[in-house]
Image 1: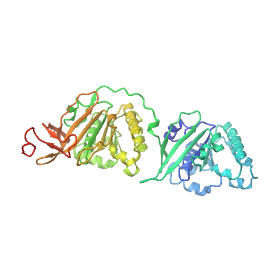
Image 2: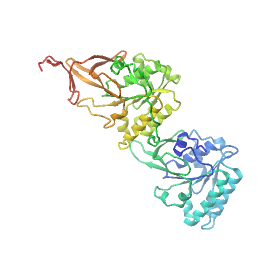
Image 3: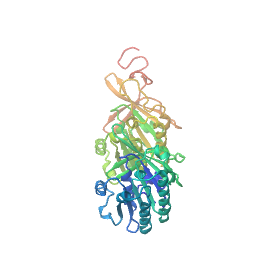
Image 4: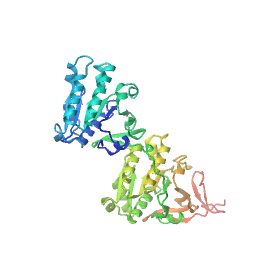
Length: 483
């Protein structure tokens, strides 16, 4: 049975087996109730409703009122398709260590109504009424009898990660989902981990959760996905940047990942937009992921250089995804990318900018494996990737992606350069894997047509570590002084 959330189904290995008992554990605020109710609304029908049992948690009026802000909530379906039942009075009136009335109620409803989903929220508080032995017997009895109806039984509880190792609920469960809530700056973080899922190849690791107006959203961890082996496509694609393709042997090899390094203001975003404009002119569908500039800012910038990308954006050939830095995390970026590639038609992707994103996400230890899988995902889809990355504006250049540049097939660098009459720009192709390329330092400038690659400098000092690049010749430096 699908949960109604495609990415949650992906994490679970295909959804939830009918007749299974799943325990959803986590602290208050982690998203257990929202997830369970969203699954109810996604699967309930007039023939097979969803039944949501509450024990001694919040009253139904509050429970329903808190749902009104979510787009999945449809109040007209209450009662006929999604039914709320309170078990509090039954628990108060029951004999000590006897959950038989509760079990009988759940089983009777399941056999009579044949519901798609039954939720008990919260099951942990049943421990206040019965012993460990009696709880085991009651849950075993309920699970085995409800399973005959093919109903998915969701048990919610405020269990800690340590309690999932010893409680009888977890020994009996077919699946265990551990939700978490981690305070951190600039925004707190929620997560989901599948501890156990019988009969399914679930995705391991901690997956990010967002709770938005749409409800519960899972962002699968890309390191858990195995990318297929990439067979590079033959041929090259034009960048559209005047003079660059000639330096790169006729353009960028298809499906390559290209890294553009440079300080702030040097023209990285403009180069990325030109790469996109060229792709659209070639009839390709393109995706631009930005962490700073909004869609309108990017479109306005492109228009200044004569590239009208609005029409392509309006008809779906060009997609802009703006992820504000405050909401940025690694799983958010990979999910945007994965969904952008889902239909197999996207051929060019720009990510602006990667080093900035890595710093904002603050997951240094995870980043190498993450980046390797992200690039593999894109290459497997048949798309070509253009990535910008920020370097220092002044002083010796430092590698922003320390030890990771080998993951990119091509690396291009733009730097400021000291001239006698001011400051210019210099570009060089640092590397191209399995391809010849120009190894010189070339002047470049921002013109009305975008980035323009110009003549090669005869001699430049400071490329490998001086405080600044300086243009000079062999006998006289750039300011007319004897060297």
